[in-house]
Amino acid sequence: EPEVTQTPSHQVTQMGQEVILRCVPISNHLYFYWYRQILGQKVEFLVSFYNNEISEKSEIFDDQFSVERPDGSNFTLKIRSTKLEDSAMYFCASSLLAGGNTGELFFGEGSRLTVL
Amino acid sequence: TQLLEQSPQFLSIQEGENLTVYCNSSSVFSSLQWYRQEPGEGPVLLVTVVTGGEVKKLKRLTFQFGDARKDSSLHITAAQPGDTGLYLCAGDSQGGSEKLVFGKGTKLTVNP
Image 1 (cartoon, chains in turn cyan, red):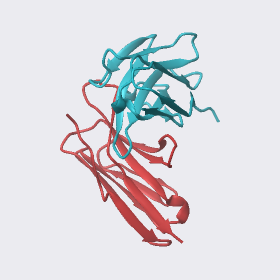
Image 2 (cartoon, helix red, strand yellow; image 1 turned 90 degrees about the horizontal axis):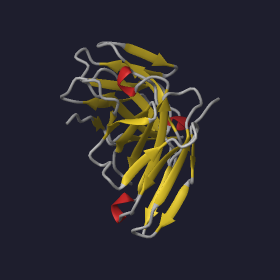
Image 3 (cartoon, chains in turn cyan, purple; image 1 turned 30 degrees about the horizontal axis):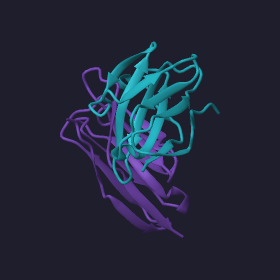
């Protein structure tokens, strides 16, 4: 069964360092997302990506964050200068239809980011 | 801001019991999705409900979408230890937004 895969599963970094989280969405999906979940809190939307550009982003997704799909298969989330409060589980998701049109989201297993 | 409140936050029951968990909002959603999340893993979609009043069944799980599309419930019949997990509801924001708004979840423990 097709699945969304994410790497690394866990990354520990120092405050101020750059981090890149990688995702391979399901191959025929068109919409890609990053969500995050701070320990004990809700899953929060960060950004959606369609047709090689950001289609929507939340207020969390500030200038420190960026996404790209460099080679047509990988979908990456970059945090330029990590802060302590960026520590969270980051989930990549993909869907065939847009989430706002009841497109079913398939989530990866997450990348746990710990910022020291 | 659209919010989804889930209750109860924690639920611990014995195998064989029935249970209902709730997902409520003051906002209208185009659809609601229910996910189950295991520790250290991503949410896995269980069902999507779209029409007000809709009822969907998935084996021992029954999902209902409120008539006004502001709330939903998940009922589990004869719970089993394998049902243990975090149950999340998530709603499609209206107005063409692509993001899902998640509730905080109900952590269910089914004891053998």
